[in-house]
Every structure is written in structure tokens, then in C-alpha cells.
Image (tube, rainbow, N blue to C red):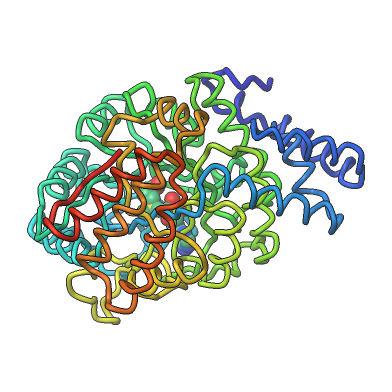
Amino acid sequence: MYDPKSMKAEEFISDEEIRETLDYAEKNKDNLELIDSIIEKAKLRKGLSHREASVLLACENEEKIQEVYDLAEQIKKDFYGNRIVMFAPLYLSNYCVNGCLYCPYHLKNKHIPRKKLTQEEIKNEVIALQDMGHKRLAIEAGEDPINNPIEYILECINTIYSIKHKNGAIRRVNVNIAATTVENYRKLHEAGIGTYILFQETYHKESYERLHPTGPKHNYAYHTEAMDRAMEGGIDDVGLGVLFGLELYKYEFAGLLMHAEHLEAVHGVGPHTISVPRVKHADDIDPDEFDNGISDDTFAKICACIRVAVPYTGMIISTRESKAVREKVIRLGVSQISGGSKTSVGGYYEPEPEEESSEQFDVSDKRTLDEVVRWLMEIGYIPSFCTACYREGRTGDRFMSLCKSGQIQNCCHPNALMTLKEYLVDYASPETRAIGEKLIEKELDNIPKEKVRQIAKEYLESIEKDGKRDFRF
Ligand code: SAM
């Protein structure tokens, strides 16, 4: 029985409801009157239900798809301006007791080197990441209660926050670790994490169980209900995601939106972010073995439909995607990207020798952070290293209120410019800096309030002249 308010996985992600939704979407994919009315509703920027959004995803009418793309682009501009938040993953350990068929860290992989960073190694990695200019990390680890217990993760978070090297600092640590208990989520919350990220991988229960044949991750309900436990443990910001390629994308799309609706219905606040990874080649993993790979065009359509369906939810894209794909989906709604990433355990401080690679998957976008930052500016975006909301306590519904208040342009925009300025002064190449300085000059005019603009100018000057850092609105 479908019930978005239920706390049972199989009731808030009801297989029957998804099948009926897909059926409804298929039947209505040429119903232009209905599609127009859904697009009109999406224009109100209050989101769409999973059924409505699924109709848009099923629609194959070129003209209507273009309308959805245009709207996604407009919503992106209205809510996120031209800012793109930057982050990097940091892999702590690839010890794992699970049997995930798509991941090379699965227990049966006996030849991949198993690594776990010591606190000293973390310090070196973090200094290397700070020296690139990063301020925001997503930490990643396999699931292994012996090798990576929660105490280890907490110790790593403490170490990461404690390192202040030159003008560097990691100001927000997001956490992507396996589903855990309320008690452990409370500990993560108390350690000051930003977003708790957990990809569902697939919402299709049967496929989920087949793809996770062994280990604690096999338990579909425990995994699917993790975000409720995280919120019960005090974590306001949670990040959803699906690993596209494992199951039919239309099924996953409906499941993802139902999950968002469930969080909104139960906790009064939807997911902070949605990630859209696709299965990639990795050590002993061939993505072609999974039947449901999607084309770049379908991928773009999914991103656009997510954007119009949940306008307040940030969307994340990693270096799994190429420069070309990233450029396309940034326009359609992605608000956060990684840059200069390594998916190995260690590797920022000292590159891993190829024969000892501990990489989780191949990276498509291999550019340095400086190159990514420059590229973003050249194509009209402001790379932002901002972490202000989290540090000002604007998480969960308080962040959503800021979004809805229309004050983003007086708050996030100057914060983006100030953190970009820090990046330019401390880390950028001369060429990137030259482009960035011009951009900041131009973008200052886009701060609506005169008073805020004036203060932002003073702060920017102080970053340059007095060496001060970490201003924020
Ligand atoms: N072990 C934790 C868990 O089970 O959720 C942490 C996540 S893992 C380090 C990060 C994510 O990488 C996984 O949730 C999965 O979606 C993704 N991943 C695993 N293998 C992948 C592959 N071959 N290609 C792309 N992404 C992959």
C-alpha cells in the first residue's frame, strides 16, 4: 500500500505505485494538453509530483522536451544564479564487507589493494586538497565494522577540520558512508558534518537484492530507511542519489522523487541534494554488463526533469562525467560539481603507482581544479567555494527558507564572489586569476542591495590587502 508518510521502505517506495506511475506516464506521453498543464505547474516553481514529472520524462515530443529544458535552465538561473559550488571526494578506506556487483571494493575482489588512511596520511591528503583550493569535501568509505568503524570515521572528520595549512581550511565535510544506526548518525551530526549522502543505487527491491547479494547492504529496507534514521539523529541535510545504469531509468526516477516526497511529508524538508552518478568502468567492473545504461541525451533529460520537479534541491555531478556532459547538465540544473578528484584511497598528496591502484572507478574529467575553475568562468559561471549556510546554521528547512525568500542573490551571490576571490588570491594560476578578477568586478553589479554590495566590496579588498579570510553573509 503506497503511503508517503509511512516509515516502511516498501510503503513509501511502493513498487505498485511506481508501476502505475510508469503506466500512467506511458499512456500520457503524447497527451499534449496534460503535458502543457504540467509545464505550467512547473513554472510556479513549487515542484511536481512523481507522477507529473514522470510524464515529462516519458514525453518524446521534441518541442515539449525543449520547453522543459528551457524551464529547467530558467529555474536553475532563478534559484542558483550562475554559481556552481565546488567540492572534492576524499576516500578514507576501501575495506568493505559488502558484495555490490558494480563496485570494485566488493569483498570478493582479492587483487585490488586494500588501503585505509592513517590520521597522518589524512593530514597530508587534506593539505594537498587545501593547496588545490578546496574548502568542501565529501568523505567516502567502504562498509567494514572492523576496519572502518564509526569511531574511525569520526576521528577522520576531526582531523580534517583541525588542519589549518597556510590560508587553507576544510569548512564543510559531507559524508558518504554506508547506512547506519540513529546513534551513529547522531555522532556524525555532533562531529559537525554537512550533508549525509547515501545513494540508493536502485529503488527496485528485487534488483537491489540481486545487486547486493551479500553483506549488510543486502537489506533493502535498512538501506532505504537510512535517511529517516539520519534525520532522527539530527542530520538536517541529506543527499539522495541513484546509480544510473543498474535498473530502468524511468523506474529509478519515480522512486527518487517518491523518496524526496517521503522526506518532505515526514520531516517537513526534502533532500538537500540529489546526485546522478552513472556506472563506470572500474577495476573488475565492466559497465556493459549492466543492461540499463543510458545515453547522454537521456541523462540530460533526467537532469532537466529533476530540476523542474524539485527546484529547491541542489543537484550534484561528479568527475564520472566528461567535460562535455558536465557542460550540458550544468546548464540544465546541476548546482555542485567536483574538480581535480581522485577516487583512490590517497592520491592527492602522492599519485598512486598504476599497478597499485585502489581507485573506485575511472574518472572521465581528469582536469585540475584550476582548469575546471577557469573553464566554468569561461562558460559563464561563478565557481563558488562557499560553505556559509552550513556554518551559519542555515541547514534543513532554514536553508529552504532562504531559497524561498528570494534573498539568495543578496547572500549566496556575494559569498560566492568572496570565496572565489580567496581562491584566486591563494591558489589560482595567473591566467585563471586574471579571468576571475574581471568576473568578480562584473558580478558585483548583480548584488541587488546597495548596502550589501558595498560591504562585499570592502570584504573583497580586505581579502586582497589585509590577507583576511572567511568573510560571509
Ligand atoms: N560504501 C558506502 C555505501 O555503500 O553507500 C559509500 C559509498 S561508495 C564509496 C560511493 C558510491 O559510489 C556508491 O554509493 C555507488 O553508487 C558508487 N559506485 C560504486 N561503484 C561504482 C562504479 N563502478 N561506477 C560509478 N559509481 C560507482
